[in-house]
Each structure stands twice: as structure tokens, then as C-alpha cells.
Amino acid sequence: MANTNGGLMAALARLTEQPPAPRGPRCTVGAILDTIDDSTAQTLRALLDTRTVSATQIADALTAHGHRVQAPAVARHRRRGASNGCRCAP
Image 1 (cartoon, rainbow, N blue to C red):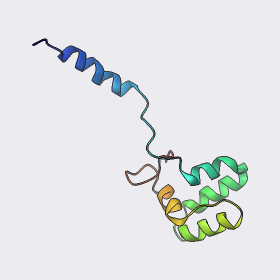
Image 2 (image 1 turned 90 degrees about the vertical axis):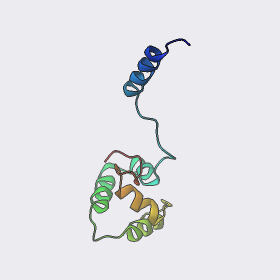
Image 3 (image 1 turned 60 degrees about the vertical axis):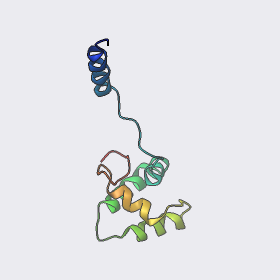
Image 4 (image 1 turned 180 degrees about the vertical axis):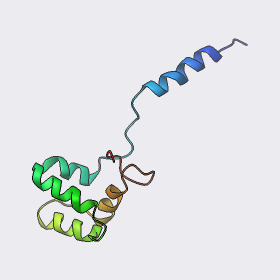
């Protein structure tokens, strides 16, 4: 049997050099943040970090203004960077 450990070692090393593959579909809240003007996006980011404002309140406000999003998507975006969050950068 041929020794393939060298090839395996090189293949494993290359994995650390590649950017991580995206997980799942694009985050709805992230997509909204990319399409709104900078000052509105800054306000939305501040609200996302304000725990006294619920995900439902944020989702309702966004939906009322033409950005269809559900509360679980807002909650998932709030957990960005965590294993159960969206793939947006924290």
C-alpha cells in the first residue's frame, strides 16, 4: 500500500488557507442593511444591539416599510457570529 500521508497532510493544510464556505442562504437582515441608506442602516444596527427593542418590533417596522422580514430572522441576525446565528460578520 502506498504512503499517502504526505498528500493528505498537504490537502489538510490547504483547507486552512481557503476562506470559509458560506453557511446557508443570505441573511435577510444583512441584505436589507446592504440596500438602505447609510444613516438608516446605522440606526437599524443600533436597534439590533438594543435588547429592549424586540425582534418582532424591528421586523414589524421593516415590513411596514417594504422590507419583508420575520422576527426569527432578526433574532438570528442578532446572534451573528454565534453557532446558531446568521453568517454576517459580528
